[in-house]
Length: 323
Image 1 (tube, rainbow, N blue to C red):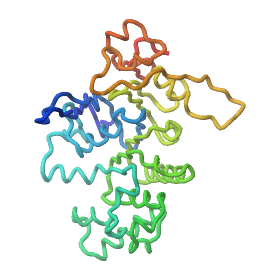
Image 2: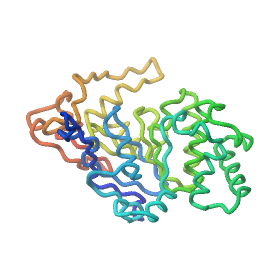
Image 3: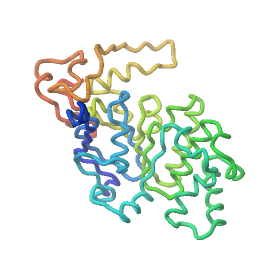
Image 4: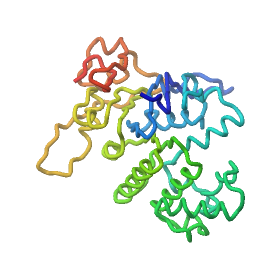
C-alpha cells in the first residue's frame, strides 16, 4: 500500500486561560487532546462531533493556521511542524481550506476575480494579468459560475454562490488536501446538496483529499469514505462510513446517530437522551471523558481512560464496554 498523504500523531492544542490583575495564565483549555489519524490520497475523512469538541481546531492545526502545542503532522512524509519560511509557504499550495462562513470569508472590497486570483499572483503561478484572468474564468466555470462574475463583488451573490467562490479560491493552487471546515453548515438544505455534489465531483476530477469537518452526520455520510467521531478533544471512534453508520461501537456515536432524523414515518429509531452537559475542556473528567453522560458507564470508566483500539477490521473505538 502507498504511504498516506497526511499523518497526524498525538496532536494537542492548549489555549491559555488568563486571570487576575496581571492576566497571568491560570489554566488551559484542552481543545485538542491527543488526536491521531491518517488520510490517503483521494480519500475523504469526515470529522464529526458536537460544537466545541475541537474539530475546527484540529483542521487549523493541520494547516498550521494555528500552532499545535504538541504532536506531529506529516504531509507526504514531511514534518509540517518543522517547516519555516519558503518551505511553509510552498506547502500552502498543497493544503487549502474552505471556511464555514461564506459571508465573512470573502473580502467585501475585492472583486471575485481578485479574490480567486490572489493566490495565483502571490505564488507566481501566472505570468500576466491576462493569464490570471483566464485561469480565474476557468475556475469559476469549474464550480458552476460564469466568467462574467469576475467583475462583481461578494455582496452581489447568494450564500451558495459565495461558497462556490470560496471553493474556486481553494482550487486555484491545485492543492492535494482541502480542509472543509463546516463548509455547508451555513447554507440552506437544498443548497447543501448542490455544494456536496460539487465537492464530490471535484474530488474525483482532481484526485483531492478532504478533511470534511461537520456536525451533521447525515451530511458526512454521503461524502465520506471514513468517519472519525470527536468528543471533548479526542477521537472516540473511527471507521469506514458504512460500518460506523450500520453498527456504531461507541455509546456517544450511537447517541449522535439516534438524533439524525429519518425521512420515513414508518421507521422508528430508539431515542437516546444523554444526561447532563458536555464537561468543561478546562477540567476534563478523569478516566473516560464521556463517562459522566454515558448510560453504560461503570467504575472502570471513572478511573481509566480507554485507548482507541480496533474492534473490527478498520473500525476502532475508545470504549471499555463497546457495542
